[in-house]
Length: 552
Image (cartoon, rainbow, N blue to C red; front, side, top):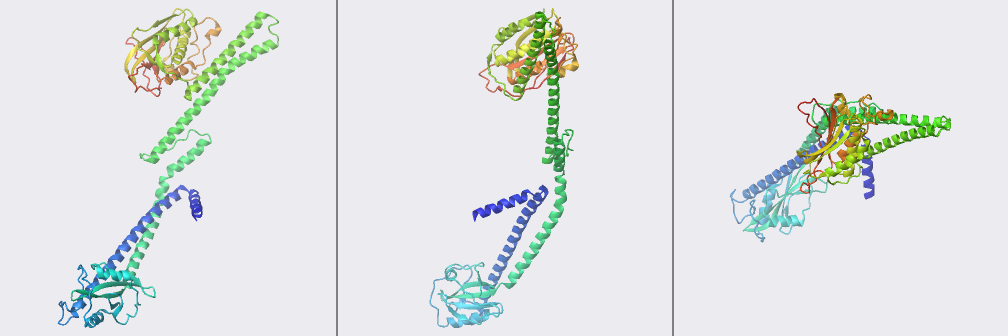
């Protein structure tokens, strides 16, 4: 049985899942409204029925009380020796033995109360009939349970003390049991049976009116809700159509954002933001593939040309010529190897897989070591290191920091003419975005960067005007790099929760500033990694300095 119920529920869920969303919303809203209205209608009809039955019970008691008083000799009044209906709210007295004239009093009482729609009878305290009359023409005899008789003999009667019983024809009757008191003792029970046909007809009429009104309200609600649902779901339909166009490759699709700040409006704005980011990602991917293809075309062409010359015997057996061709092919191979390594580094940084070892960094030792490694790169430039003695240790990864500084020093040396200077310095900065920090600057007196190029220098494969070549004399030294150095530097600094910025004056030089937090065990709230805003260094008062700002 339980398995059959589960299968039925699953079939209903599957059927509803195939319905359109607007049908499901309409069915759910109308179903909930129907349950609430039907519940309210049922409650109203039950309250009406209970009130009508209670009023009928009260009417029967009033008639029985009046009839018992009028049945006494001398008219209305109370004679304790005569039989009377117990007063409502009074506790039934103990059961006693009726007097000799009890049957006569009971017969008179029954005679007065019996009518076309009411049947009266008197029962003994044991429940057996003592006095009865002919049954009303449309009422059949009903059977009263022993528990109801016991309750009527022992409990205080109230206006709600009635019982609903059914005769042999299945017709409902209202039954009221009232204790009969004589000489201070309960000597019997007055049973009054009354038809509930009028009450049932009234309740049925009320239910018919209520349920007809509920059906009309549901129909009207459905008719009015359909255009509202259509209008409310229109943005979702537009999103569906837009998603289909995006899936087909059209990334120019944008939704019309509604003015309301509701769920649909926020969803439309989020959808547009998502599409913009997807379009930007696709553009970057296409540009990346194009740039990589362009970067690999030149070394591959050079390798192919060198190999072809060797195969054709262009060296004519001259070891010097063969060595020169081999050296050129080796240089192009190294160029491709470096490009692949740089691309792998960027991929790891993008995926957050860069291996970090955060520790206290001795900035002076790190800068001195980097300067020693960069010294062979100089071609007549002066490389100096300027670090104060009281500089606190920085928090970072020593190897990542050195790798970044080597990239920056390599760029500085490349674009600084012979006789120029490159300075590697550091100083303590107070109250940065994440507390105290250390600023490391790489400053050169090279050719500088044009103002229009500064916002793009951290972009991948971006290179400034090719005329801005290296300072070397040999042709191979005047070939620009791959355009990935500053992008890698930015990614490495981001990985250690630092900030990087660049400032330059065309023809005067460039300054790259790195800011990293200090190492302090007393500042556990300093983030280990995460986004931070990069602030470019302030220009000197006497220079017109263009700045570029990157976000980490």
